[in-house]
Amino acid sequence: MNASMRRLLSIGVTVVTVAGAATLVAQNRTDVADGSLAGLTSELRQLRVAVETLTRSQAQTQALGVYLSVQQGRVTPVAARLETVQKELDAATLKSQEIEEQLENFTTELSRVTEPARLAAMEDAVRTFKNEQRRVGIELQQLRNRQSQLSGALQLEESRWNDLITRLEQAMR
Image (cartoon, rainbow, N blue to C red; front, side, top):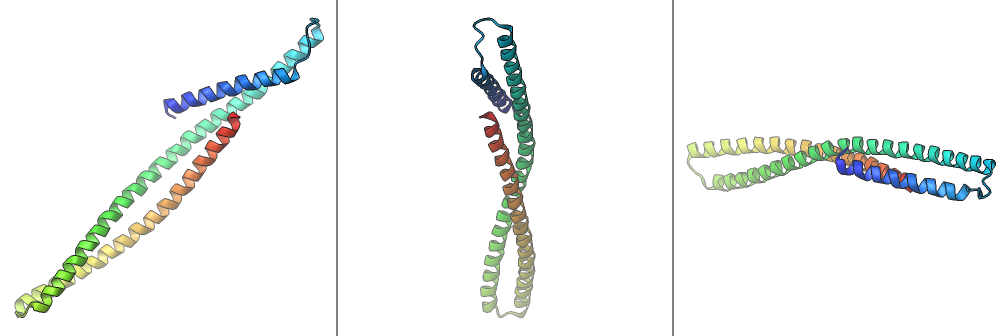
């Protein structure tokens, strides 16, 4: 958990603690103006209950902060892997387009060639590029599958992250 997140969490816990204690004491306060021992004892009990309640709330808030930190540790690498796959996919797409252009050029040139030796060399080149085109096509499909899987995983992890943030916000109210 980074320093700013800890500081924010600490401030939130403090605000919740102070506000909760003040609210509980104000709601349950009995009149102890006469100095009676029973009134003082009652107010001390109410204060103890308020402190116990706030302690539980603080523990829950701290636990949620830890969960948020762990969840961030899950989101970050999935997002990085997705970005890497996207770059690989872009590069493979570009390569596929280049191969397609080369094939078109060779096919056009092939229709103009009449020399048997050059014709055989051109046909060989066309076969080589078609094989490369198939290989790149398979690579593209695999990259698209990985991209889809990682996108789903990232959505799931981000959903969990958002749920934890919502729970933390509710705990701070």
